[in-house]
Image (cartoon, rainbow, N blue to C red):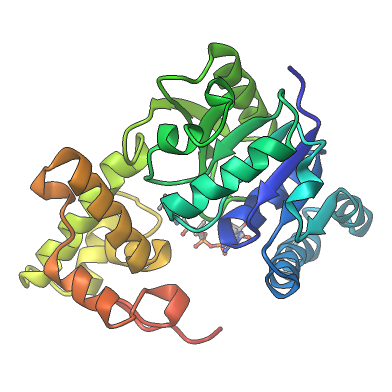
Length: 285
Ligand code: CAA
């Protein structure tokens, strides 16, 4: 099956990044937000990213205009009626996602593939809200989407081989390396990354070293682009807490259990970079 028309539900950090990358790769893209205000904020973020690319000489002004010409914002799900694939990047809330997929299932033609960008929720539970479990997979991108080279294709017990192959080829057409994983919380990357980040918080909590020395240790000792506490702030402490709880609930292993300090920071509303404070403080810039 050939994918030409792409739909993206959600124009936040992840959905906007996915829509941008798909439009840059030549696809006709419709991206949907729940209201005009959020839609305009999301589209402005994409324009800002593209403008930075022009300023760095990575893209010409006319190329940027062409990319923007392929990108159409909407607040209506009906706009997905002619899409070949719909990528969903909305809030990590299973009842909301199931309701959304139930509506999309009625709007989209039978051939449309559905792919969720969830980082930790179970894909088959979403697929079960539709009559197209065979054409339903996970397609998990990494932040920042335009820069990160990877996409995880998540195969459920009901996904067909041809759907997995089509989505893998689609991810490769976005210039990502596509890896395939089973439908268990965290897939490949977060299954390994989340216990590591939680461990970094635990050793900080027990006073092993300063936050800077923990981060420098992994950044300079292992050549990681960011130390674990900086990365936790970057991912969002609320997100990390949410994923840890889901993984702990599924696997019942202590290494996935969020440490006390993480819970306290989340309760305090200190989610990291996005709120200006987490393990570190960030200026509004
Ligand atoms: N949006 C779009 N592009 C961005 C960006 C953003 N928010 N932040 C940085 N970039 C781009 C820059 O434009 C630049 O692009 P070019 O190379 O094309 O010029 C590139 O990223 C590098 O940026 P900088 O030179 O400004 O900064 P840097 O070298 O310090 O890199 C970084 C920044 C890419 C974020 C780097 O620190 C990094 O790779 N960090 C680790 C990120 C990571 O691990 N992400 C995965 C998180 S886990 C996840 O997402 C999954 C989940 O489910 C929780």
